[in-house]
Length: 347
Image 1 (cartoon, rainbow, N blue to C red):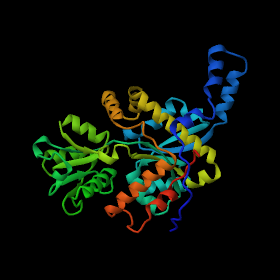
Image 2: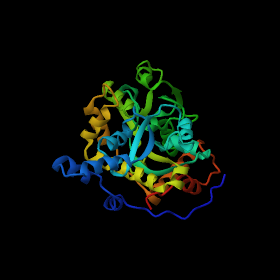
Image 3: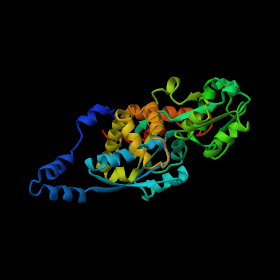
């Protein structure tokens, strides 16, 4: 596999692309709806009919993907010329990336620590932007005596699967603290909905997963948050990313750029309006408590959504991390890998 270095892409700041947003569809709609000016309603309808169709895969059960329905509800996809069909994808990451690479979907939102390994295998999917940081937590009972990650030595941690982003993340942080995640800590897999029960029964001494599951367990079972993925060097590291089909970028870069802009704008809107974003997301999470969803969004770093070279460098850092725990090939050149799986569509 060729990991030849490419020229470092130019980093485009969030404010720069917001200032340079290509067009605003709202003007025509406002004129037609509010003032009834002849022909403007027809122009608005014509504009909508000319939107570029695009299929976007996401996980409707993950609060970290809230900017996706927010962009739909707030008309941000349309603002950037897109007619987006959302596909709620609950299969494996390999299946998701294959669906994107083969055109069954055009793009998807997911976790960097879940996507990097299959991207190493060569799927034609390019990461175009980070969405936010936060949303992974490790919990223990207050009676366990576990107050930090070093306290996991000799203990068993429950995870939703052995390749989950949370399992990968906390294995990486344990390794950096001098605790061998393979031999000093035991990992046991349970369905995410049973992690709390496993902890209550004493089958595990800690549990690790993502929001909203892990947040809800912390609140309902009065558990102690031992660590999360906003500690130390990770406080300004993205965890959720946008990936776009490589062939789409090559053939229709403008559409890939429009999607990236729309989601970044939605992410910025969500961080400034967390209660409204939580309400929009709650339509996809029946029974969810909007107050708790709001608190989750406030705890995430939706203001941190890197693009350009800053994002490429974060991908390379994660590749280094995953090499340290044997998830990706130790011989992989992280910088070349990051350059291969990244595309600076905003440049």
